[in-house]
Length: 283
Image (tube, rainbow, N blue to C red):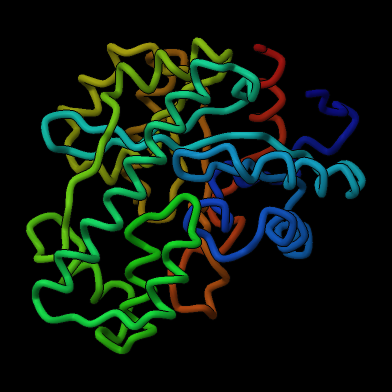
């Protein structure tokens, strides 16, 4: 990908967004339009465990003058029962090994959804035919889809309540799913010529584990994230500088704030175009 270095390098890009190809509400096309309308000069689309929305998003981005689009993915991994998310940028979309592994993960997601529905039915929650059919149509299902269904069914009042009561680890509807290890995910990204970045390290809630993860060949760390405090930003900036990592940031946008699904506004915790140009010129 070429970035016009004549652009104002202070223009902003959000490097962590989701579309309806995973658990966002906007289609990839609509997400690009929404980002441009809200003053961004670019985004990375980083849907969970899927590359499905990238072609549509890239096609739409090309229609907007000087809009920078970065293809990406967010892989869920686990280390000693702690979930660790890893962003991968500029994956070779034709890499067969990568695509086959993603297909395995997708099958596991579908199985997990069915298992969680069954567990919820076993405790007396009834899903009507329309809800079941809508869930079955989702190609890359996650817990957020099920949380939305529970809200629609008025089993819960909010998405957060759905997770707290039914879908989080230890709750009656929770079912674990297949996850890569951090090492597997990083190697998968690197073998597909991508750039692996540790996502929202503050959510890991363990400085010791974040330090341990630095033994892996990450190329970046998501320093700027909505829930990161000023102290977190300073801490992760220091880690980035110590290990020679790219400093990235993004909103983890899933839906417009008025939807009540998540409160992260697109562009919140965005970074300058200059950060992206450095990442791209490395490849």
